Length: 117
Image (cartoon, rainbow, N blue to C red; front, top):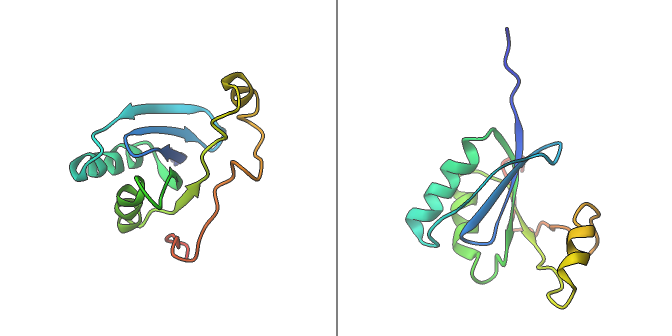
C-alpha cells in the first residue's frame, strides 16, 4: 500500500517554529536557540514533518536574515511575512487569523527564489 506524502508549511520568527499541514491542521511547534546550530535543528524539525511547501519567516531583513539564509541554503522556499499590526488587540488578531489580508500575506522578493525557480 502506497503512503501519502504530507505537504507542510512552517512559520518562524527566528526561534519559535510552527508547522501545519496543507489543511491548516497544526502538526507541531517548538522553540530553538537563535544561533547557527539552532537554525540547523529548525531545518531538521520542519523537514521531519513532510514535504515543505514554504516557510514563512518574520523579519528577513533583520533578525530573521540568518534563518532565512539557512533555509534557502537547504533549498526551501522562504517567504517574508509582514509582522502583524502590534497595536491591534490580540483578540482581533485571533479572529482574523484565517483571513489573509494585504498586511499579513507573505510576499516573494526576487532574491527569494525557492526550488521551483
